[in-house]
Length: 124
Image (cartoon, rainbow, N blue to C red; front, side, top):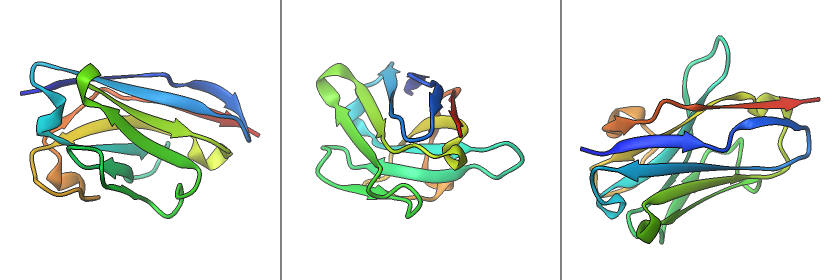
């Protein structure tokens, strides 16, 4: 089992940047495909980005493609989400998640472990 803790959220103006981190403990991160999801007030949680176990493959939601970058440092047991050109509609609680499946995926059902989330607020 792995425990996940997100950090790096906060308040930023539109057009600004934030980098989220997800630190894993309890099991080596390289055993997992990792993903980021978000949930805005009154909306369903949605997929943002995912990265393969070795970091060689990534996948993004259309809404963040070209603005967000997911990466990982397995030696540090940490996954990152670099968010640039932020928009008010990016405001949400951001969650990282770990999947034991071999391939990256956007479906929440494929993820086995979840962090508590970190709030990102983008002001206009």
